[in-house]
Length: 194
Image: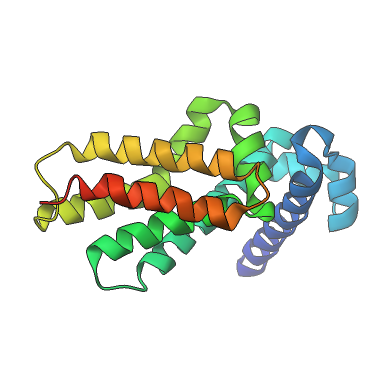
């Protein structure tokens, strides 16, 4: 039984890895399932069995990307013991991870287009946005914020980060634009310090 579970997990991982490469390089619309299964050395039935459809496979790949970005946000934020610096480091990590070539097409372009805004947004709420909310809530409980709605601030800041990532993903001087964005976000957050 354990061997079957390991084989199943290996098959799922292999399909997601190969599919991610294709979705990144070609985009969702141009990706062909036959190419994925041929490269993964599996059958088309494996995709339908584990993911139901091409869209289901894409959903699983996007979920992996979202989780990787969230892990990166957590890791970068953990580099400091200062809660304000953690917040800024986490915000910067989100933007820089989102605009990386291996993530941006799946996360920022095809994700909302293929799955719909509500599904994409729900996935964001469960990953990076959840971390942002937890950090803001922790900061307010620690007396670092004036008395404001943390839910509203989470949505406003998350929206600013997502929109900034969409903008930065389209320019060539990403590092400079990330710096400019973070300067504005830092100044905005200063207004809420208690």
